Image (cartoon, rainbow, N blue to C red; front, side, top):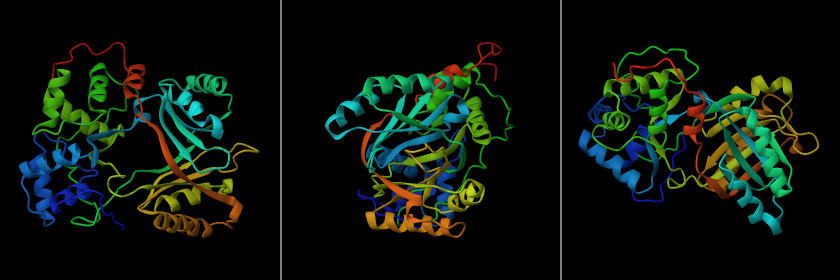
Length: 365
């Protein structure tokens, strides 16, 4: 597995933390000592206190985007969709600022493409609002938008690893904690909503992060631990751990490879490309006739343009194992500028998918 050199000075313990805990962090009342024990088993001598101090410093220095639970917004409710549009050079700043002024726009990137050079993620609590918001953006900018909602997800998830201990990033303490049973509920209870909103930006980097969350929302610590654990099982939380700032770790090349895959090959090609360790997102999305011929997206990250090109070629090689790929069957759109990155507003989506009745004794556990 490829590993990176960080732009910042990192100790051996720092590197072990980044590699080991991009998922599988213990969800227990006092998590630091069990996590440290897992590192000691891998030859990294540390204590719970030293591990806490290392994570706190990594967070303060911007090496981590955050520490905590990565909430899957789709499982909470509402929808997010990828949208492309054109911003003419003379009006580029005006068009992109107009798009960014919409609070529903969570991310926005400039990408290398002769026409569709602006790509943004629209997040709404109610899918029916997508056409309304896009119509407003088209009216305000004078530019047509091309909605590309996810038709099928083959893979979402990335590990950005460093040279150092635990190079495969395979420490997993997710078996720690209470034994929980998924509920199958499609909506949130009011206190589950409060928990989602509290943890969406990360857990506090303290000795007792789950207890501190419990205090913040007025719930028992045991309930918070059990619910986060259950959310992991249900898919509402993708993983618990450190969320690296991949730019700080040296992964600066962001390439969106797009492919015109024969429709009858999607179910074969999707899982094959998803197995590539450097592919962080892999989706089937719709084409737009006459404008956008591609129906398959695979996102890659690299530490240099040369590495990114090698990784794109590896994706092409996998594609070629399954169908005859011609030069005009694919493209790579590299990101050239982050225009907006505020993240998805989980509070609005959680509000819209919270029960209005049925939970009365919120502190009964």
